[in-house]
Amino acid sequence: MSNKRRLVRKYEPGGNPGFLGDGHIARALIQGDFRDTDPFILLMDDMLDKKTNEPVGGPHTHAGFETVTLMLEGELGDELHKMKAGDLQIMTAGGGIIHTETIDKKARMRLLQLWLNLPKKDRWTTARVQDISVDHVPKKSLEGVELKLYSGSLAGISSPVKNYVPVIIADIQMQPNASYSFNLPASYTTFLYVLDGNLQIGEEKKLLEQNQVGWLDRSTIDGDSELNLNAGKSGARFVLYSGQPQGDPIVSYGPFIADTQEDISRLYREFRAGKMKHISTVADSQKMVW
Image (cartoon, rainbow, N blue to C red; front, top):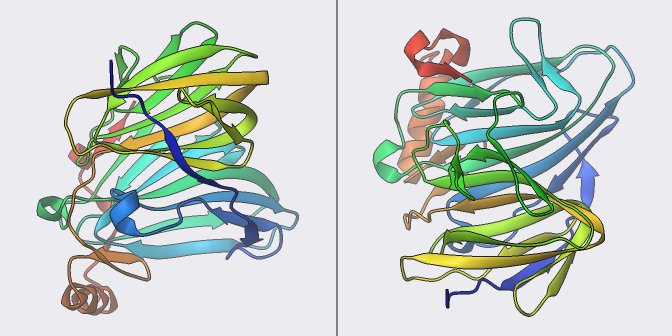
């Protein structure tokens, strides 16, 4: 395979105080122009060490995109719906929903929350929510590699999660000094976030270390590409995100993603008029659990 992927940009995001108050540190992992990160809009690494029982969070609204939440540590939710480490949820906001995340006790957790663009034709689609537990995530043991695949297809396995935008999301653990080559669509926007250890990327063996984000080059030609990875002497754990660019400009304001500024104004009017319903009220056919 002649199309070898290369590491073309890397950085280490700093941590900033999060909106949940004391004990909340957030790292903004996606930096740069949306034309370069399409279909990925925003990705936060949220680390919470909450030491009181004072409630934080609460109801909030979204529209025009999907949230993709991967729990890395701890638990989030209540007895009716609780996410634990290794679980993933994709919530399609579509035309607009209200979502509630309230934490009313001491808690320690870490999660990655992605804002994933919706194709223009599906911007205002009916809201839905998909949950896949760590027990049902497709897994594969490769040569010195353990793969958990949350979305898309990779290394001969596929996730049951449904996508509007084709996207691959995988949590990958490599043993010390392990090497492996993954095949990815050459035209997909692709980046890695290293959780532990370090690894070398591509034939140039460029180093990507813990807490760094690394972006790969992207081709305009369809077909497959090869991503060569070599783990360091302590191994590596990273999350891989790879998605099909949509090529449509977006307008972002607050909790809404839209095609025009007029759309943003309309969404705020609808929200204030009480026209957006809670995600818990969607039809059972729009709730998928694996």
